[in-house]
Length: 71
Image (cartoon, rainbow, N blue to C red; front, side):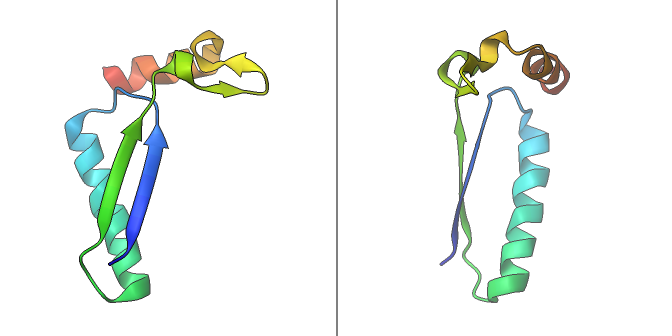
């Protein structure tokens, strides 16, 4: 059974997550041909993620993206 982990910021709407995991599952199934793909979606608040020494809660690009995905 293939297992995938998707890690990202919270806020993605349920319908968008459903489309995402369907596409990822299809790609994994195409590669492995064994089925029963398990996907974990892990979400971290922006203040718990840093890149290049900067909390993502202070990153204007991330803040704009969060606004878009949260509707």
